[in-house]
Length: 493
Image (cartoon, rainbow, N blue to C red; front, side, top):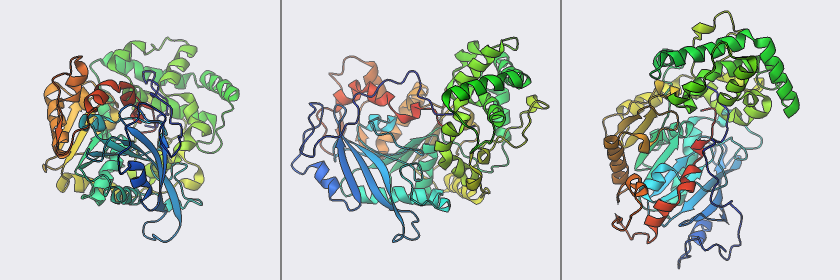
């Protein structure tokens, strides 16, 4: 459930760091040329928007922005804060992808899958209350799904006069949930939604779907049994394991006083999280690396650390995600597992919940009405929504079920929390891609097929407006930009 943030080993470095350049131009040959009515000038003319141009990847211009937002949209003239966002600019005659992070925002460029598929522009927005996009002082009651959706609504309204073509919103995991909530409250803002691996905890206390998932996930019962055994053995060897944890914490200067409250509670939390983390980020082939019950304590500790990460459950790892845990505790919900195989081995009943990972001052009661409303709207009134899940991802155990109004759900076979359109079976991949391109009013060959081919001489793009002359090169060559997508980082959700 509560997994630490760690960059995947396969993630490549971003093409160039986001260094600030002078307002007179970009000193990089990779930059798009300035036009007669320059995009930077158009952006600077938007009230409340600050604009800093940064080193771009090939085929784009890149901007770091902030937008002044009310802390409470019910009081627009009250306290304000600066919300961070970034713009990957292609051309104003291309579609815009609104990327909802659900978390903090990186300051280096990346390209999400929908942006690549439509060869468009991309705005990525930092979620309110993730620092530095946090009011000071912060009233945490202003952190809810409607307030965040209204942040995105105001950003869309500010930028649409500049980017007047089709808009598609997207996000993965909590970012996917965020795109759904925005669509629910402001359905006219965008022309479609692509939500990846977005869980739907309709009724927080009814979580039997997760327990059922872990009884059947994958094709190897022996792997599931070994993973259960890792948890059992770790708890049986608690004294030895906590001693190793304490030594590592002392060496790294980690503390446990502000959230979970003790290293023993943190240890139990990471053990409880291990099987979830394994299926969230590993593949079934990784079952070969799961240690047997006869493994040494060092082997068990190393495996759990590699899969779930002991350092995340210290104050220094978990407190940067207080915004997520607060949202989960009050509105989004969290998975509640029974852990029947660990009876008699755990010490802290009710530990596995969002409030456990918050400082006492931020803990609060759960309001079930928010997710019930979202679920009902998605099932009955939503339109132009596309959901992608991974077959072996535990977060997909409680998925969204959209209406029949030009909306679709796909599941990538054998995929984990990194599932995307490219991971679907070919017929579904092509159908999902065609739907996205239709919503964006773009006609173009499949990016996946173009990427797989070294001969792009017969590839052509046609849109409702003038084509970008270097669109094919940018789609083919910017693989590092795609791998820099922040969904390649491990986060609580």
